[in-house]
Length: 246
Ligand code: SF4
Image (cartoon, rainbow, N blue to C red):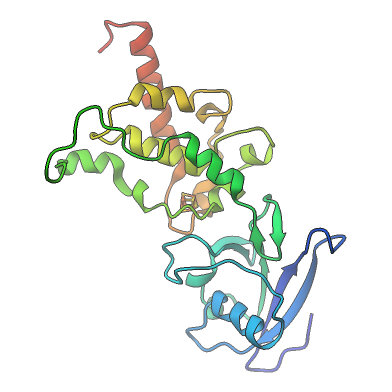
């Protein structure tokens, strides 16, 4: 690790170029933060002035696109909303763990989004939508609650031991979205949705470990949404088997 001057912070970044490097390695850069410098800003300082080959993903810089999720000082965080000043003078930045690395801090999210698509993450109405808005009561909206705040950053997916197990488990984010649409009063295909998440790779592979909740940089609780989805699925399955249960 390099020796720091008083106004600098040592930013250690995991570097890896599959196909070129035999294994990941770490490189330390001195950066000069102000009190408002974020980890993303610090990575740009390195990119612009020290190493043009450093690769990382970003877009909105406002914690709403989810692109810059990384593993920073041992925690899943968004680089754009994490201040250097919160983390001390030695910072280690790694890509999201347990995901294939494309280069440096950029991971391959293909499988994450394929699994998200499995749950049909959109409203499928059975009747034609009204001419104006489709009114929901506050109580109906409450059922969806803050699930709509998910920014698909994949931090929860990267933190989940059932995902690490290497099967085809849908993962916390996809199941959160499955619940979000199953609970939406405008949606008309609940039975189909229950079928989509009930396979052996679906929601029953969640062992309620809560890593996802710990990892979420938006302070959501995917484990709770999965529990809600388990309850909904159990009710729908029971009703199908014992029709007089309403
Ligand atoms: S639930 Fe949280 S951690 Fe998971 S994808 Fe959504 S915002 Fe990211």
